[in-house]
Image (cartoon, rainbow, N blue to C red; front, side, top):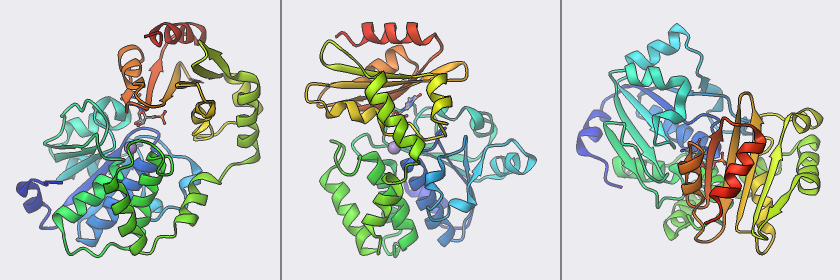
Length: 326
Ligand code: 5GP
Ligand code: MN
C-alpha cells in the first residue's frame, strides 16, 4: 500500500485520533479498528474508538474491546470528534453507513482517512485508501501499518485483531477474496503468536442453544427455493420472540442454503423496527451487490452484500424475486 507522505508526516507526532466503523460492526470492523488502535497508541497517539451501534457479545473476548465506545452524543464524545486531528473511517465507503455519527464526522475539522475494501467507494475523506481486491479492511490495516513503520514489531494483540477480521471476512479463508497476500499476512500473524484454533472457536463456535435452534428452525420451516437456484429465508417477529434473537444471532445463517449444490443466490430478510435488513450471498460470478445497490439502498461485495427495505415483507420479497431474474 502507498500511504501518502503528507499523512505519514502528520502521524509522525502524537495526535488526537478517532477511529470509527460501520453500523452493527462485524469481525472486520472490530478487528481493523482495534488493530489500528493498538498500533496508534503504541506510537503515543491518543485514540478513541467509537462505533455507531453496538456489536454482538461474542466479540467481547477481543483485545482492547473494553476501550470501545458506542455512539451516544454525550458532550465527551462530541468533544472527541470536534477536537480530533484525524478521523479514521474503517470498513465502510459511504457516509450513509454511519448514520449515528454522520453529523459529528461532517462537522469535525479533522483530517479524514478512509481504509476500505468494498466496491464503488464514495471518496468522502481527505485520504481515501480503497482496495476492493483486499480480503478485508483488517488486511489493509496490516498493509497500512507496515507501510508507515517497517520496523514495527507486531504485538500478539494487534495480530489477533487483524486475524479476526481476515478470518471472518473470508469466511475462514474460503471466499474468492482470499489471495496469496491474505495468506502471507496470516503467516505473519501466526509468527506474532496468535493461536488460530482459539480465534476460530471464539468467532464461530459460540452459539447459544436458542441460536442453534433458530438456525435449525429456519432451515426446516422457513427456507424457500425459487427457480431451483435462488433460496431465501424471512425472519419476522414470531421467530424473534420464540428464539429470543439477540444482536448477531442471525449472522452466518444466510450462508447455509449455498451448501445446496445448485443454489447460486441466498438471501436473508430480517424484520427490524420499521425496516427489513437484507443479507445477500452468492457463488461464483453472480453479483449480488448490483441487486443490493440498485433495488435495496445497499451494496457490498460481489458475493456478499447487504441492503434495507422500507416496504412490507411481502412486497420486499416480491421485489427481490423480480430483481433477481436476470
Ligand atoms: P451482511 O449481510 O453480513 O450484513 O453484509 C454483507 C456485506 O454487505 C458486508 O460487506 C457489508 O459491509 C455489506 N453491507 C451490508 N449492509 C449494507 C448496506 O446497507 N449498505 C452497503 N453499502 N453495504 C452493506
Ligand atoms: Mn470488511
